Image (cartoon, rainbow, N blue to C red; front, top):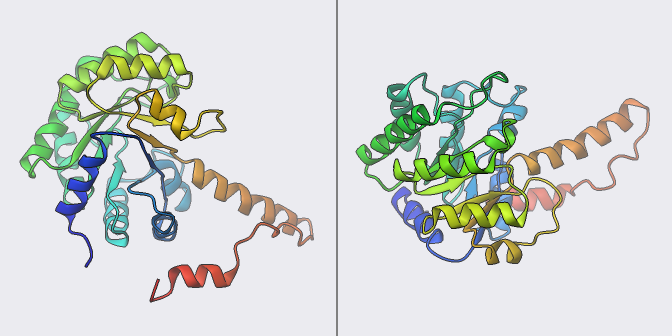
Length: 274
């Protein structure tokens, strides 16, 4: 029997209580179902991967499209799905609360709210404003039963403000505002990771590894991280393969298909009995 939304959310929360799990990021139904077939325990959406799939840059997809995408992925898999919910899709705290409520209704098991602005002159939302937005998200989740996990994100290292002390201060403020899990995408060194984990313990930490790294899952687990996501890296890898093959084709060559999956494999994966 397919899992209910409540069951998925309970499983997702339990995953955060001990150990370390990988939370890969599909961008459509096919990639979600393939990742499920590999035995992953949960999935997370990627705003960039989905945006590229519909011909838009990251952070330029309207809320309605994101909500439809979340609902589609939740219905496509028995795994819990964590939503990359960008900045919460609200001009103010009230707007964030409204959007988060709509996201919860899609059946996601968790969602994250970022504190970046997209403005290079002022790349981060003032922390006191970001806290109010997180509190609004918390209240919206609680009003919908409270079982959806809330992730607070400090975007310093990917927004051009690589200040570890400020990122940690933000994460601690977001934890106090009701975030269940904390996330500082872009930190890379063992020292940075250990500092973030120590600052917010006992709450779990998400680590982004979207690039080639000498760290293994076991290494990351030993640093105290609870979950690892890869952001748009899988989507970029898929785009890289397609672009390579297409560029060869544009040059009049057919030697770009060497790493292509077989049709039989894909048909077997997505067949009625899969």
